[in-house]
Amino acid sequence: MQIGIYKITHLPTGRIYVGSTIRMSARWLEHKRDLRNGEHGNHALQKAWIKDSAESFEFQVLERVEEVEQLEAREDFYIVALKAADPQFGFNVVPFATTHRGAKRQRPVSAETRAKLSAALRGYKRTAEERQKATARQRGKSPSEETRRKQSAAIKGRPNPKVSAKLMGRPVSEETRARLSFALRASWVRRKAATQAMREV
Image 1: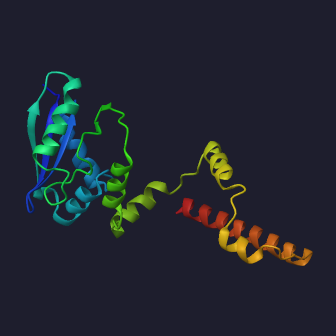
Image 2: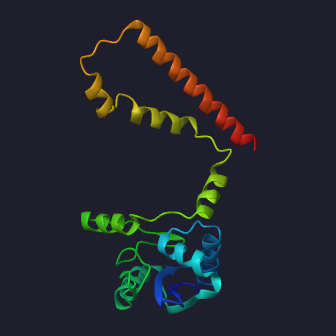
Image 3: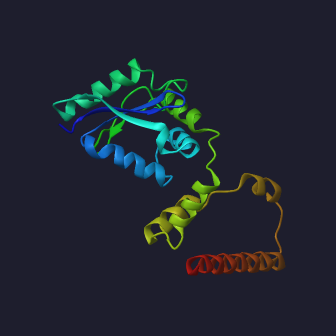
């Protein structure tokens, strides 16, 4: 039976991560792959993995269930029972199930939960290795036309409050406009050349 609840234990501290899956035999392999690549969605678990290596973690099946519909309630039960969402005892960010690999669920997120998520992630700094991997993944990628349009629409017409306050009511000469235009074009050319150089590396 592949459907069930599992936990990952960080042996040096005893902290645990509780999760659910519809593919129990593959789930630990998926976790380890993401952790090795520095791509795991749980930052605290990723940080512990980088510090202590794979040998410091243990995967254990807590319960196997008959139906996918049972997963959410049983995962909620173990997260609360084992205090997996308490930073002193676990790595889970919120005290309830959110998703399990292969069967995503949508659940309304309250303002309190959003605040907890924000607090949990605040102050987390990626290691140099994580930053290098993230840069390597993005190298050579260009945003699609649709993404460019969305970014342009989001920025268009948005004033910079600091600049607006300084320039409000101040006349700008044609000479100044020309210099600003030239500086913007030169900056754009430099960024384009730098991007092209990175793609060729």
